[in-house]
Image (cartoon, rainbow, N blue to C red; front, top):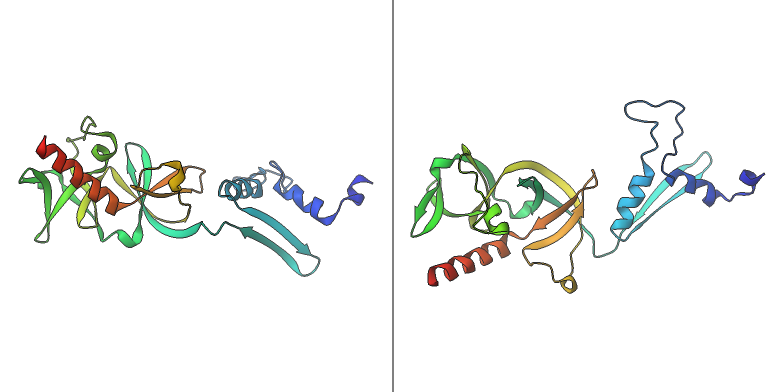
Length: 212
């Protein structure tokens, strides 16, 4: 009787309950009740909402509503010291791996020569954590992202991914080197870098070090 008295909206809400499944048995890909509840949680973290409408013999519509401050972007995901970071794909000129021995010093600045072009190198680990960061000089290769007129050295490339980018907001006093953040499909948080701001700050630090 209680079920019969429920509205259609209340019935559809059961689809978002953690552990709910229409399967009677558990397989490797279904029956565990992990689905729409995870979708709703991710959307709500972005300040949005998800709803379902269903009509007999017509079909079901799942609606996702996100704030206008949220935009979709493609990023190159890289790994540094076990943490994933994103770089806007439109700012990536190319990705290249070079032998570590290709790293040279020119006028006190570390550079690489790529097809005749001299590019300053910024090590992401050192930029984020300072000169005390262990560079892993024993690595055989440099993983470089060519962007904004320089080469950003990272631990490794992960790949391209489409994300829903959410600005961090000036009120939170976040570093301008961060363009925003996104929640990945596995629930992890991805910080998206601003390569132009990294270049500017790295140059300021270098000049400050030279003048010290």
